[in-house]
Length: 337
Length: 253
Image (cartoon, rainbow over all chains, first blue to last red; front, side, top):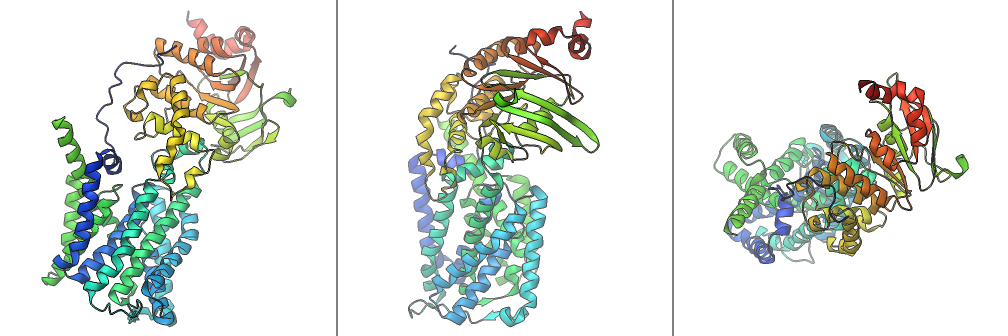
């Protein structure tokens, strides 16, 4: 028997692969060109924007990629990622102030603290899915917020941690322009790590779990443990961003743990494109730049504009900016063939 | 009989909010046999399947696999111990290709799935074996196609290839010919009779001609209980079965 169970029409119909699959299947030169373009943009950024804004974009890019790792590649929408971003910001700030370590080590300590915090939260959260997962993560993030608010002896409460140093072997990094280039390698490492995770055997299992958890279990994959591992990795990357954010601002306020910070991270990812990884980077650039521009021009209701854009993107470009652009590129390429 | 059964259940029971879907079922599946579970809708066949594969926890009773107690283990552990299942409603990963499906199944018994710091290209080590399995179910030409683009019958064949990739001791097939036209049914029967060599198969099946052609032993369930068990011809001739199940169809002619 050579032929088998079949009904007609096997022609691969117009499947709608995610942005990731699309990029992975794009020709090699396209991928290298995109990479070169991205690196060039990253190298140029503080020359075209206020360096402080460029620093914020880098931090938020890491945060968004961390959220997308869960939302886009594991199928889990965390609405409490400020817990990891903010915890790392505080730990980084405290380590930098009290231990006087070079800032990359302080950031590493912060990110590790975030990852450790992600273990119990993730353990309890991954047993739920969908809206319940989002609610559990939100609830834990609120708990962390209140702890930070009450624990004034350590966090200084509403006053925030003041004077986080930018120590790096005695170099003068007070200028945001130079600080940007000091953190760029760390950010690129974090982004590369996220890329590697998504394109690893582990990443394949995650996508399988996202698309069909029951089938993944029937294949012998312990779904909860995979989700927990993804959650902890995501917490670590979000922590890298939060730690750099603390050093970047030389100040940590309770805002880093506020639920609106979690919400903003989700918005950035949706705007850029869920499950596209680089869409989050793009979304971070747009949102941070826009917010800065609006506040600089004295506009009061910033949320109104970003919210309006968010609604437009969700309604008109469901796949986000990156997802829609890659879909368009694919369609053009198909037409030329 | 218990001593030589590969998969056995004793007093297996499952309640859903006061409704007993599976009621004190005893089952013995002999090694290298094809064992069919039949019965009218609502007889508890799929619930029994879900109990045997860990997708549901039993309310009572015991399940043994090759003499080992596997009662209440989660599905991934049951799968690792060698019980592979297919699903009644085709259950695949829409964006993965046929080959990636089989590779993912082959990978599950190794630790590779945890290597988040390695390249997914390492999964290429499974390509050869995956292609063998795809050839076995006749999907060689469609190895690269995303599964959502496959026709229904091909998806069922892919389900079988994935289950075989786990190199299972017991293969549980939930209605392998459900929703198929006559031609596809014939091909599926041929396929199962080929892959059953040296394997133990438990299948839920509505189509009695399929059961007759494949099964060594038939267990008839009714209202969650075992009504009759035995070879197909014997079961088919049993008065109780005719009244309870086959009777309805026979009486119509």
